[in-house]
Image 1 (cartoon, one colour):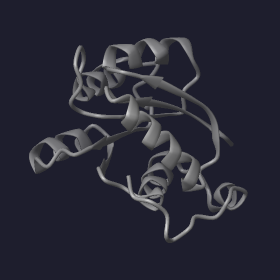
Image 2 (cartoon, one colour):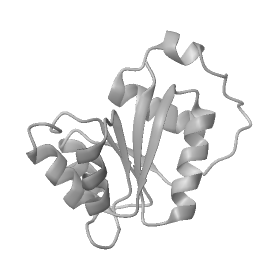
Image 3 (spheres, helix red, strand yellow):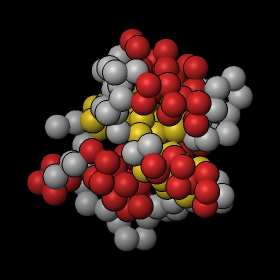
Length: 142
């Protein structure tokens, strides 16, 4: 099962790095959508079939926290797998997000770290991962 992924970050460079890391992670990918803030991300969710959301916390217009709140409040998206990818260091803030069923990956991150978080949140199986290219243990950290 290929996953359709929405990457939400206000930095176009970081979105590209996340997408590149997704490609290196071995996770089966379908379409990858991008948004520059939480509002754009919610608009994209409303128009496309998305299996997983990867979102930054600190963004203009609508933060990742606000986006997560809206995703969880909507019955159609309440169970959507969401992983926050951020430099956030506040344990309280991270625990609050995790209490909403959100995964968390610290920047910088490796393809393996991202893959493990995705497997944990989506239940992608080892067989599905085995069908994709193996990870290089010397892969880049982003």
